[in-house]
Length: 217
Image: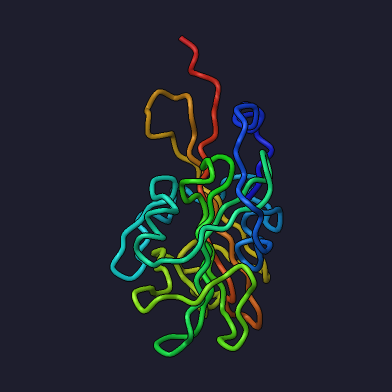
């Protein structure tokens, strides 16, 4: 979800120390971090994802750190890129013994400082084939519940939840004033879905705080 915002130039100018690069970000994680979806204009009246439940853990986009996720479920924080293309993540793949196997990415981009989780992405997985950028999930881990339809949902489920759904690649966006209530930032939430055969095979959500011009007196 690399957005060409003016704020990137400011953040990049601060400089970022980049660890050794890891295997490339893949799957739904790469789709949401990159430019696969068109999140051009808001088409939802309000953000749909609030608290995300991962097993016994509760987390929020832009507030939970990758280190919090690692403390709860283990794993290795991987990093690639620099400046605008900086991305750090944790990825866990379940084995399908309890529920259908999934791969989940918790991602921080340059706006999250490579520290705060800005994107959570989930996709259906083949338990016999592990993506190179993922690790086996611990017994404590469970596929995240974002409070919206997930893997296996139908177009009808998406229409019921969001009011509209068409095609095999669906993008939703909702904007709301930033938490500072000063009118100087807008919080944009993005939700993306990939479908095959009329069912969701991958989905996820991300948030970005977008600076706006202060209100005129």
